[in-house]
Image (cartoon, rainbow, N blue to C red; front, side, top):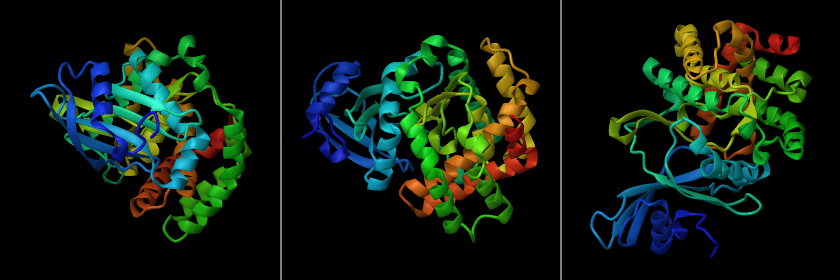
Length: 357
């Protein structure tokens, strides 16, 4: 057996007891048994809710959440190649405490040397609802998300201690591999969704794949960037409504420009209808939240990077569709992401701004 469980079936009561004692959430007694059920919609990692029993009543939490490598070998291989599992473990273990963004408390965070296997054990946030990419969200929920983006970006804004962390630095080998694989990803995406994605949106995808400025651009490193800041990675009404939101899935954390997250969220994250109706208000809210946190920003300051940032949604939809497990929901999800991101890019001229950059 590995030094840590890499699937819920590998968990033992003894391992749970040790981790919960170390985390300080099990004050007395031991875990005597558990059962688990799958949760979430992730395609790069598999998550479970674990219900616990103890030899002393009231000893510890009734449930916890666990995250493990994807069972699908394609998804797992992509995650290992890109260092996604290592990055998420390091985020929860080393960095989350320095930020204001709401994430689950972590009881275990372990990864193997080659980044192909990991385990995370969390508090169960007991949400009233999980964000759903395919259903969009309310304006109030979008506002909660924007505030969380500022809670991530402001503490890391030009923060040398964070921006110099070795495990966050771009890996040229990974960057080169993504660059080499992207034309293949676009070919797969175009063939798979030729009859499903509107021609004008597919043209944006094709143009981006052919754009040297996108593939070779030296992205400014201003702050932390979540990298997959969309509804599927958010929980609303956590603690049975005690708190408005928490942010999950930190596998794509990177250094970059914070407007990459905002362009991504507004484009592929919330749907075109909500974005068009409330775009100005949500951008103004972000500026006011950042300003209140000591990073003065205006609409004019962020507009260009916001518009270019929307292209991250296009590239993520294309690349992920090609190199993670294909599922019916995944197809719907990647099409939703592409439609929203491409609509924003067309409306505001993202590719043209990229060329001028």
